[in-house]
Structure formats: C-alpha cells, structure tokens
Length: 77
Image (cartoon, rainbow, N blue to C red; front, side, top):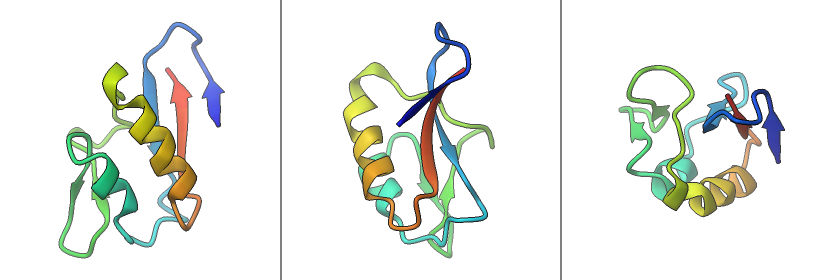
C-alpha cells in the first residue's frame, strides 16, 4: 500500500521501528537502499525514510508485502 502525503513527492520507504525485529527481508531485497547493522536491523543512509528509485519500486513493494512484521510502508513525500 502507498500512502499519499505529497502526490508529487518521491516514493519513500518507511520503517516502523516498533514492529521491526531485524529479520533482514528488506535488506535482501533492497541492498542499494538499506544497509544492515550487527543485529540484522535495517539502516538507512541518512536516518530518514529513503527515496526509492524508479527501478527499485517493484523490489520495494515486494519488501513491504513480505515483511514478516508488517514494519514497512511506502509513501509519497
């Protein structure tokens, strides 16, 4: 699901840290976007919701759908 904040904004990936338990599915699907810490939790490069490049939208949607803890959402902003 994509939540629309700014309909003209970039597509961004949001991680709900209260749900995430570091299983690493998102890291495997989006290695160019997310790094992984020593405990398996995703790391963003600037500590903000990362922008999803046009060529990675399918992988981002797959990561959202496959996240076992439902910790990921896509939004425009």
